Length: 344
Ligand SMILES: Nc1ncnc2c1ncn2[C@@H]1O[C@H](COP(=O)(O)OP(=O)(O)OP(=O)(O)O)[C@@H](O)[C@H]1O
Ligand SMILES: [Mg+2]
Image 1 (cartoon, rainbow, N blue to C red):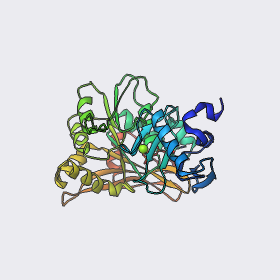
Image 2: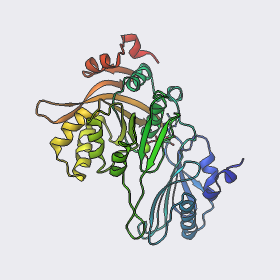
Image 3: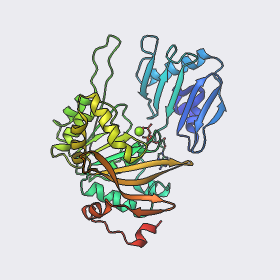
Image 4: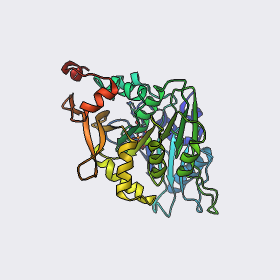
């Protein structure tokens, strides 16, 4: 099948989405698309002659994702038939030209072997991650935009015992783990009249009534942090969530900021987060390489504030143990000899 047949909704962007290694296709002016294929963003000429053509394509793609995009609803976050995530903004919110952001998502989740092959998971980390899943630790995946959080999470979910039931709650329905028993809940935005919204906090609460073995929040980005902390604090071990944070050290402040959206004070968030998450797994993107670069735990320090303490850090091409490994290692049943830390 050629690219245009496979993604008829993508118009002149279809061949770009079909290029191997392209993860993002971005348009914000006529005639040019910027593509991310690992290195720096690169411009490519595309047949979108004027701002009307860009707008028409954005509207058509939103329609293909079952969403409306027009003057009354000038913003859309949708999932396209092949799994690609679409974000689009129309004027006047994007004053010069409609802005289109496409993130390609693989039809098949990358598994742990793929992540090892791509260099995202190195040395003893594969064993460490497998043990986290098997021993039902609650995992918070952190990283900057596009660092690979969702990809890593999908591969961790693929490691969950097939006999367990996964309840996945998401904004846009991106996670497709290789697992036989998955229930997916995706939030619904308000309609034009402003009614009908069903948000993530409600879905997290509903998920609890659906006999989950594992509760998964695709991305923690708002007031639903309150429900997630509450679920992870009330005996539901082995859950997963991702959070935008540039380093694990930023995660506590980020959780506190999100908690404040739900009316939680700092102390409450810190107290609950320390119990809720057993481990933080941090992904980084450096010179085109996405890798897990840090494993940490969230600990309340002497003044009761929440801090991230390193367990394993990737430094100059090898893994280095941090102070939190002393307690995390035995919990995981993983021993690292000096040789283990070096192993590729
Ligand atoms: N190990 C990998 N090998 C190859 N491609 C990868 C790898 N990890 C991530 N990618 C690709 O990089 C892109 C970004 O990854 P992903 O969506 O997981 O990042 P993210 O941190 O969740 O982004 P966002 O902040 O937008 O939620 C995706 O297209 C994904 O397929
Ligand atoms: Mg993501």
